[in-house]
Length: 226
Image (cartoon, rainbow, N blue to C red; front, side, top):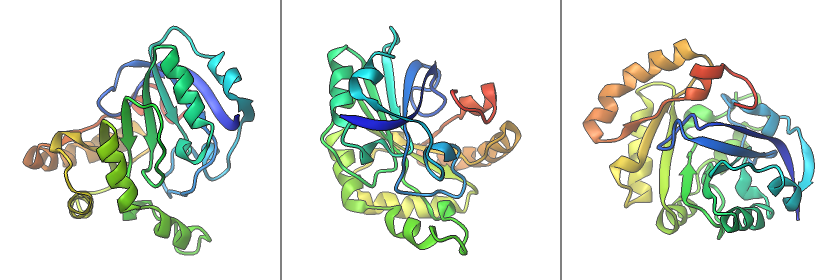
């Protein structure tokens, strides 16, 4: 089985509860959404990469224990299932980064779900605006993922006004532990990220949520392979 892969690289995780953990990242190329602020357009808006067999991908793994299957949207691809199975057979710890619009029965230690808020909708003149808006949230799938897998919900927040939308979505999903909710500032440069992050501190304090860093931007800037 094969899939288009944008990149395979080794770095520390930049976001979520495993921030700072050395990991191998396998980035699937292709996405069913088109977030206006997407920081990996080469795996979404203009998918790049080469088609690789699962065995070829596995051959590029190292001794690093953590594997992150990301994208794009890895859950789009049939190959994610055998790839995760082979990673498990190698004793790896597996995180899957997903927008939470597709459910699959797949090996996973952490389902890292990033539901897309209204702030992700492309500009109105874009041919993707209506399509993205219709696809960006799938409540039944979000419920399935959070019931079946250990999970974190990471929300990209552009301003404190997004908080009400997050609260409404969490009510619709139901059963989410506050400690599994992480707010991530939107931005592609460190100055903007930290400015927004500071404004989010009172919001997470009130609700026992978490504030997630974006170490990849702090450490390396807006670059591939980080």
